[in-house]
Image (cartoon, rainbow, N blue to C red):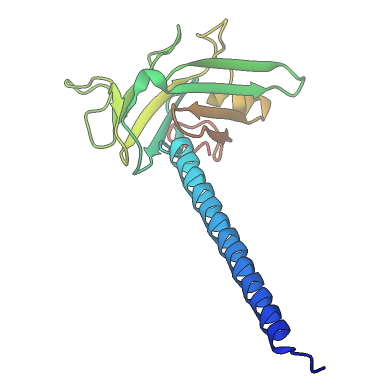
Length: 203
C-alpha cells in the first residue's frame, strides 16, 4: 500500500497558516491597544499640565521701600492662563528669629489687614502718590506689576516683624509665598543684600 502524505502536508500547512493569522491578529490588537493607552496617557498628562500650570507668577525683584517695614516687589505673570482677580492672590510672609520665635502674616494681595496701606499697580502706570493712582483689581497674563508689602503679624499688623529693619536687627531672612488660583504657588527667600537702606535689594 502506498501512503498518500500530500493531504497531511496540506493540512499541516493550513494549520500553520491559520496560526500565523491568529498570531498576526493578536499582535495587531496588542499594538493598537498600547497605542490607544499611550495616546490617552498623553492627553491626560497634557490636561493635568494645562490645569495645574494655566496660571503662573514669578517674583522678579524686591527692594526696601521705607525706613521701617515696607517692601516693594515686582511680579510677572505667565504668558498663558486667565486673568486673575487681585483678591484671589494670597500672600504669606513668615520669618523666624534666632531664639525660635516665629512670625506669620497672610491676607489677600492689596489688603494690609490692619497695617500700612498696600499698593498694587502695573509697571508703567501711575504709582502711589500720583493723582490718578488706584490699585489694580485684575492681573493680566504676561503683565508685570509692582506691589508693596507691610511687615507685622496677624495679631499685630502694625508691627515691623519680617520687615527690613527686623531682618537687619536679628540677622535673619524671611519667606514670602504667593498663592494663585489654578496655578502653582511661588516662594521667595527675602535676604537683605545691602542693609536696610531704602532701595536696597532684598532677594
